[in-house]
Length: 126
Image 1 (tube, rainbow, N blue to C red):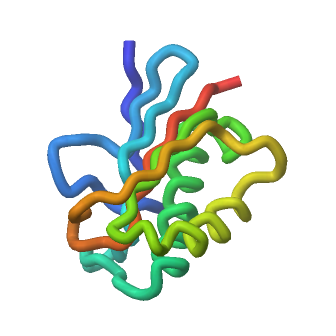
Image 2: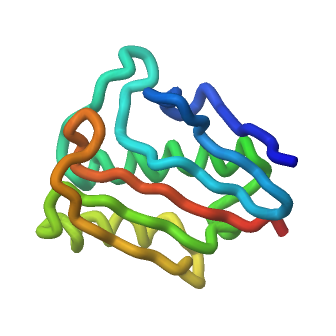
């Protein structure tokens, strides 16, 4: 059985999906971009600021599902430009206390709403 997780503290889905799904002891968080919660428009600033917003939103979704960043076991980062890799890493790393999760980072030709960065994560409920 699956449990749907949505919170008003992160952007509402812009398509036919949910912010997150919990199945058993696993939580799967959809790709998240830096959208303004009120206007539903992308907050297009620097890649570091977008990454911070995305990570804050992921934190809110994790919390709504009863998790923290300590529960994250896998993340996927999608970048519109791999030249932003170091800047994204700097912000991303600051959200984890110790052991980092497994991760993949890829450059894509385009992201929703022309975002610089989109991140999705998987977490285990301990």
